[in-house]
Image: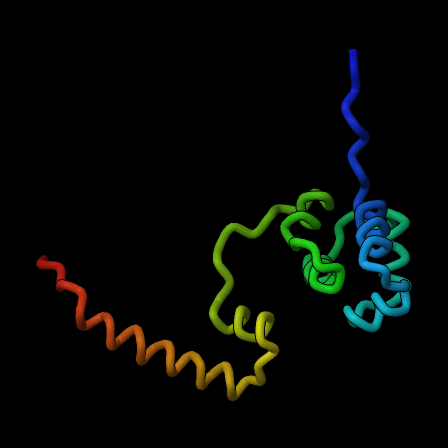
Length: 122
């Protein structure tokens, strides 16, 4: 029986991604805000259930897809779409007042185009 390639552990995957990104552990700590002890434990596969928020931050810093990290870690991959608030904060690093303004503008656009859709008859 021929065995396929060995699957990388989360720690191996993260270490490989860190090396490919060409960033030091210290730079990874600075980029993610995750304590160095926590990152070290993740790299050594000493964390049984990694924090999803940590995986998301690591994915961003390492320019990887967060879903890939969730899969390697054996965590369920979120299926729903993020809220507009979370998307605006994560994608654009907007402050709360800008998020509120963007939501108002989006609501105005929705209302503008909602009037153009045919009304369903009940």
